[in-house]
Image 1 (tube, rainbow, N blue to C red):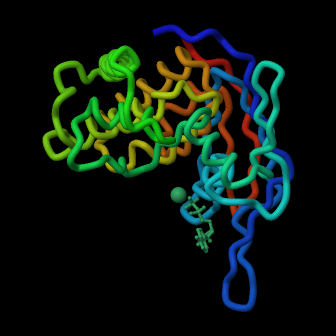
Image 2: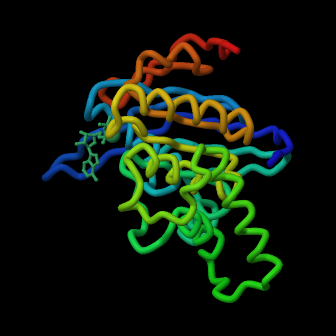
Length: 247
Ligand code: ADP
Ligand code: MG
C-alpha cells in the first residue's frame, strides 16, 4: 500500500482547556503551542494528570478547547479543528483523523478484519457494492499484514493477545489513511518487549502513511527516534529539541 506524501501540517497555538471543578475550574491545557508535519512524530511525555490525554482529545476534536487554534493543513485546504461544528468534527474523525487509545476498544463480536472494515461503513453505507466490499476487504487484509497479523484476520478480540489487540487497534486507525494520528500510551498495557514492537510499528506506519502524529508515551528508550520530544507539566508544554529520526 502506498500513499502519496501530502504536505500536511498540524499547527496548535495558544490551546487552552479548562474543566469545571466545583465552583472553580481546573486548567488542563495552558496556552499550548505545537507544530507537527506529515510523516513526523511528536512525542509527549509528562507526569500523570499533566494534560497529555486532554491535548490528544482536543486535537482529535473529541473535546472542545476554551481558546486557541488547531490548524490542520493538507495540500491547500485548511481547517481549524478547535472551531468545527459537531457534524464536521464527526466526519473529520471518520475521514482524516486516526485515534488510538491506551485500551483498544474492539468490538467483541467482530473478527480482526471486520474491526477494520466497519470503519468504512460508518457514515451510513449499510449496503456496499460487491466491488467496493472486495476493495475494503483487501485494504483491511493488507493493513493487518503490515502490522504483523497475517493469519489472525478471522480471530475475535478474546482470541488475541494484548499486543495483538493493540496492533488491530492501530491498523483500524489507519483504515481511512488519516492525515492526523493521535496515539495515547499504546504500550502501557504491554510488557517491555511487546511495547517496543508496538513503538517500532508506529514509527514504520507513520513514515509509510505520512500522518502528522502525536504520541503520548513513557517509553523513554524510543524517544531518540521521535522527531521531537515535548514535556508536559501542569498543562504547559515545553518544547524539546527537534531531532532527526535515526535510520
Ligand atoms: P494525563 O493524560 O497527562 O494523565 P489528563 O489530560 O487526563 O492528564 O488530565 C489533566 C487534568 O485534567 C487532570 O487534573 C485531570 O484530573 C483533569 N481532567 C481530565 N479529564 C477531565 C474531565 N473529563 N473532567 C474534569 N477534569 C478532567
Ligand atoms: Mg492520559
